[in-house]
Each structure stands twice: as structure tokens, then as C-alpha cells.
Amino acid sequence: MTDILTIQDLIFGYRHTPVYENATLTLDHPGIYGLVGPNGSGKTTLLNLITGLQHPQHGTITIAGQPNRDAVVFEHVAYVQDSRVLYPSMTGLDHLRFVAHQRRRPAADIDRFIQNLQLTTFVHRAVRTYSLGQKQRLLIALGLLDNTPILLLDEPLNGLDPDSTMAVRSILTALSKTQRTVIVSSHNLDELTKVTTEIIFVVDHQLQLEHLTKDVEARYTALYHQQTTITLPDEEAPS
Ligand SMILES: Nc1ncnc2c1ncn2[C@@H]1O[C@H](COP(=O)(O)OP(=O)(O)OP(=O)(O)O)[C@@H](O)[C@H]1O
Image (cartoon, protein in one colour):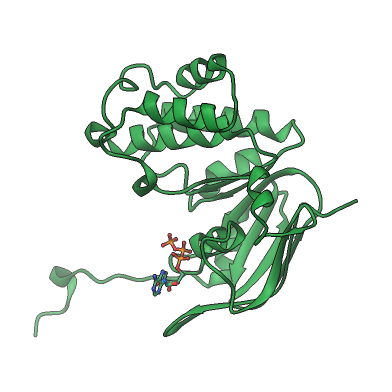
């Protein structure tokens, strides 16, 4: 069977910052995959590389057996980035209608996602008036409306209140029962473990896929040696 995503010998870095050094990853079955790593480890860069928004200095990325430089690949992948991709003067509904038109989705799907992601109270307003969480909910709805076999979500839980977090959780749980593949980057380990046991860690410029049935937090600490002691100024010894 053709692998869903294959990354081979990926090398990528910014001018003074190496990000990936001969990284390799294979996803061979559909499902939800958490993408985890400390700030600045390269999660957004990876999603940009997969979708061809950035290009590796070396190595290959294939999606459903096709090199990701081939435009046809984007019929397979939807990418939910941060809210900078939204148009401030357009309403949420304008965005949803645009994507539905592009992807030939029925109008009923728009209504479904407006309900599921609780967009009703603001969907008719211009995006520039939205709060962070409202933009985030619209972005997720747009990604789902794409209805592609692969969905990439970059920190979708950012700024979401408990109700919206639960809504996203139930959507991811529903997606996990389909043949779709979702890569979701998040720092919310607790929430990730509610929807998946498959975690891609970004460690030492490499990608490491692990099947974790318990305690992702302990694994995170073991991988990244997170031990931070902060001394506040008024706790410092008087000089
Ligand atoms: N345009 C850029 N120019 C130079 N360096 C960059 C650029 N974009 C990202 N970087 C650097 O590349 C590294 C990886 O960044 P990236 O945004 O992929 O990390 P991340 O894991 O998504 O971080 P976070 O968890 O904070 O969102 C970081 O060290 C970052 O400072």
C-alpha cells in the first residue's frame, strides 16, 4: 500500500538556524497524529515544508506517493495555518462560501460547520472584528470544509475556550473513525492524548514517531529535559 506521507533525508534551515538535519518520517496508516516539540523546534516549518510553502535544501517529501511539488497533491491536503491567512474585510461566511465553491462542497456542509464550531453569533461579521478564538474556530471550519484525505492543523487549540476545545476534540474523534489523516501540532499534551496515541516528536532536528499509551508528559520531559527554575527579583537575596 502507498504510504500517506514520506519524508526522506530532509535538510532545512534558516540562515543562522538549522531546523531539520536528515530527518525521516513515514506515516503508513490514516489516523490522528500529534506533532509535538518545544517552541522553535520546527513544527510550523515542517507543516510549511509538507505543503510546499517552504522548500527543503535537501531531501524529498511525498504525499500519497506523489512528490509534494506536484500541484495535484494539494487536492489531498488542507492546511489550517494561523489567522494571518484570513481576509480582515471579509466575513466568516464569505470565507466558508469561497472554500465551499473551490472544493465543490454542498451549502449544507457550510451550515453543519457553522453549527459544529459554534460560529453562528459572528459568522456574518467581518473577520477584523473577531477575537482570537473566533478566528481559530473559523479556520478549523475552513479546513474541515476542504474535506481532503489529509488535514494539517497548526496549533488549532490556541485561544480556544473549554467549549470550543471540546468541540474540536469531538471533531478529531469523529475524524479518527474515518480514513482521513490529521497532523495536529499542539503544546496541549493533555488534550492531544484525548484524541491520539500517535505522537511525532521533533527532537534534535529529527522527527520521531512514537506510539504512546500513557503519560505523554513524562515522555516529553524525558525527551526535552524540561527543568526550569525561575527566581523572581523580589526573591533574590538582598545585596
Ligand atoms: N522566517 C524565518 N527566518 C528565520 N528563522 C526562522 C523563520 N521562521 C522560523 N524561524 C526559526 O526556525 C525555528 C523553527 O521555527 P518554527 O516556527 O517552525 O517552530 P515551532 O516549533 O512551530 O515553534 P512554536 O511552538 O513556538 O510555534 C525557530 O528557531 C525559529 O526562530
